[in-house]
Image 1 (cartoon, one colour):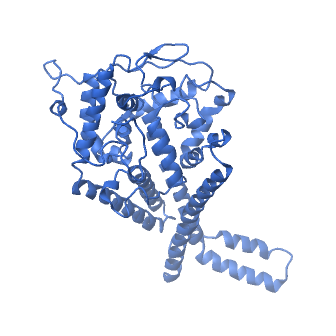
Image 2 (image 1 turned 120 degrees about the vertical axis):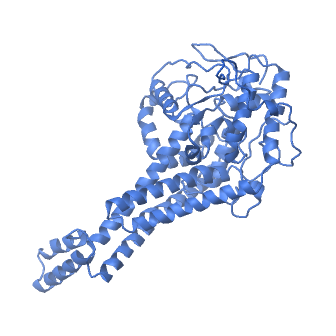
Image 3 (image 1 turned 90 degrees about the vertical axis):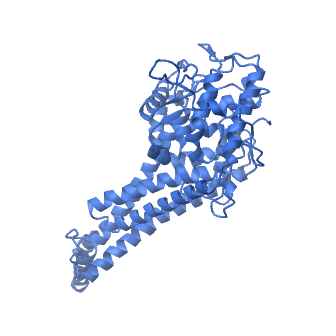
Length: 478
């Protein structure tokens, strides 16, 4: 960033830029230190990392199998709840810790023909190619630059006071609630980048091709979740009912049977009426459980998709839009240095504190700060490098944004509600990071002090811009 700009243009309130106190030499040294952290991890990747992602993929698939087996008995409430929970967890794992991270190129270093960003696709509405361009390149290169980062409010919400108010934003609390439930579809439409079409930067033909891709993903999900698996569950229940001569518990009448009886009382011949009644009796004997199982499985799949959407929305919004994060004007990033790019990533994201299990289920995006600094780094290494990032923040008097999920969630939704109306001021930002005190009252020893003098590892794929099929982020060169 240019050194002549010390303050962000905040309209009604001045807000000091987090880079204001940093010299060019500081930024150059910061870049070297962050590069060193990245290269040190990349030079140490090996079998332990490889085994982790394979284990997560295996666990996710086992959850799917468990969920589907339980839903064969989905007419039972306990089985329905357990099966739905397994499917919801499986969809979260598949999207967050697996799909998002594999398509970021975090596992490309393995050269695995199946676990690679160039071939992986995920169980969500966005096509892989559109998402990788919109997210991996646009968002991670131009993070929080107003007018360039299209993930800043997803082009439908005013989440920063710098954004010009429009009456359409009055409804944003409502359509944010809809986006929460339908998040995968909102992201897919966002990835179309219709603004580029209106600006003449994208052809109608290209948009049409991308729409066809979304339609294909929608059709596949609909057939799989709302037709295929419900039919399998219903058929297995029906076979079991026949084998047990109708002894499985089920409703007394079937929907088809009621329809047939209704038809049999109409103005038709007596003989045909009798056939309808016979068919209705057979339907009532064998089909009530089949129908109930089919509909229960459909409802379970709908619920699992909503669980995944609500969770993904919460994690992503809480990692990007809390009060702690900074946004930047295009002018502020003119002639941006590599160190400036790193600092913008650092202060443009926020972490979510939680247990190791929470971090796995969030795709390790609880470490959103580390993810933005090193988007191609395997997610399991973020906890390892976090103390080193904090050490840099403390020495260069930079904020390290972090908070519990409830705190971050509250701030995000307070902002969405407040900025639905005209005006608004930037919320107070955190000061420089300070590590906790030891029991004697002095500063605790830095967890990363021993890494201060490290040198970058000599690795051919060093830096977050390495040439892979997933990450195509484009920071300033070294």
